[in-house]
Image (cartoon, rainbow, N blue to C red; front, side):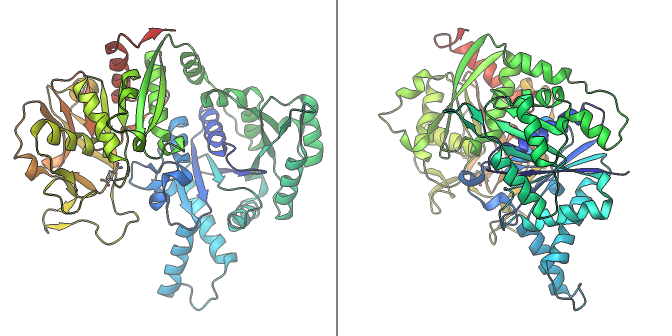
Length: 542
Ligand code: GLN
């Protein structure tokens, strides 16, 4: 199948929402019956984002096939139906490591290895490989035009128009039009400069998507078109919006998908955006409200919890409940400061690494358990929920995780082991060595999770190095603790719940990676529903 390539670059400033624009474009093209994929190219030297702190680039998104990828892949999966794989994201670091490995093997037969052609060829091969069998491949180039780091990517995509013929390749440039409130005007100069910079490396954009505070007028579009050498209808306005799910509709209204289909000479039906219209309608027509406290240590950058925040929003869309998410810094919670929990309808503790802030999280879990407040623990939030239960209900105060205290006396959470060889797994490298990706989990009948999922087997995505110590757990007898999800062959405990509680579910996997605005996710939907229905004093109709 011949693939049509759409390259998206960014200009003027970073953080303009290129990922969301790429995903939204994918959504409208999919709504025209086109088979779409999206690939993200990241200019940094890390081999993948797995070792980067979430405070720097936001969460690490885990794909079904077990790769640790940029958070933009989360947007792609929420907007299009194609599942992302390890081929949908690569970094400069991974390209260099591939080329250097080949050089050491002697694959280049005595050649001098250079950025052009060796690095650029490796980039082009990965793009082509990731786009195989798709009618449309949208390729998002991370960073901003003008960065030293992204130059090899830009050179590679320039060459692709030569290799594949210009008509099979489209360049979209996403740029910022600043609004000067004193003079009440939108400024086009930075965009003109950004396009000039692209031109100097041989790329003439075909489409400009202009991010701005306000919608840009026809006159301004005409001016930009003239100065940037672009036809008028290919200048698209993308103003700030209260919901990212409105963006496919914005882009479609301005004819972007028509322009693209004509450009590539694709004979396809008009876009059917009814699903997106429904999502937007439901989102703005909620009639109830709840407040969920999310307790974490990366709260200065909410993108660190992007998929969870979106999954709660999706649950709100499905239940007509507006979910107000309060991000609470776990380091600011102590014994005297638990008042904050009184205002909440539910508590969620997301994944995390290391021991900073765990005491605050343990206090939050204790509060939820003792006050019958819905509790949702994800990965680290599961480990801590078990530690809290064993310390405060069973009475074993030494219960801990070896992640926080290597020599603890009751390591109820410990590093995953290779049971056959009786050794700790992955003790050498940090990068890419956790248990990663989609795996089967078997649910216990007569459990809350079984009732919620309504099936016996589920596949969810994992990303962890530590797990429940099954041997030690056997020493504990408590009728309240229900082990409701196990891996295949009973190897590890994946979910536990508390029986004498309104809603207390702790899972080893990350359900947030499987939520999308059209369907939501059963666990998030039930958590939101229960949080609303239980706490009569807080919930109210809007
Ligand atoms: N730090 C824990 C582990 O490595 C939990 C990981 C997570 O929350 N994703 O097992």
